[in-house]
Length: 209
Image (cartoon, rainbow, N blue to C red; front, side):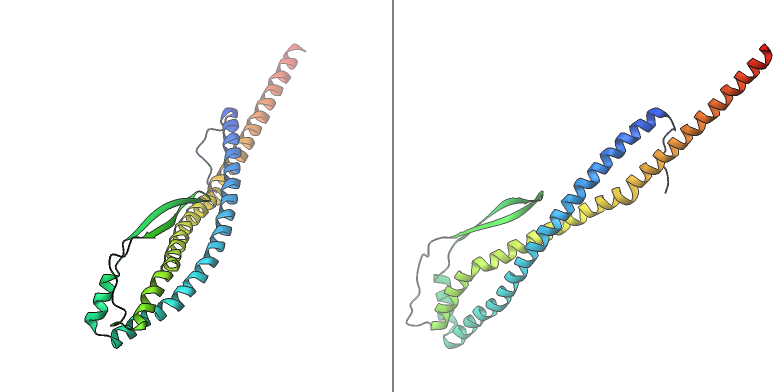
């Protein structure tokens, strides 16, 4: 492990030890954040799986009703009926914070229906299809919301994991190796100075005797 390019002085040693304490504290905080993110991610993934299964099962059934309605009625009648039931859909994207990640929270509302089609000329399947799709829209939006939340949290997990790994396997070990090197170097210098002083003292005593 390569050491940091720092001069082996006591002042630098003290500074490096303080930086090491901060790095260790930061590593713990990031590790705790990563654990929290993973826990939330798994919980949301379970909800998304349930939501996705529900959409995958129900949406084809609703679309099938539209197909049957198109077959049992003329294309013009079906298109006119769909056109007359058009509504404004107001979609508002709010933001919630989960473990520091801003995730979407979708809210929607329907506008008024300006017109209604004649039930005499349309098939019951079309009526059921339109009502079912409107009732099922919240499920679709919930799935979209959960899917985007998972994507954002996965990105934050990856970013946090990289930072944790960088601290754990590179930054902190390099600091610890450098602290050890400087400590050994200072001890060596101290022993050398002690030996030199003892030699000077011995020479002085020899001259005085």
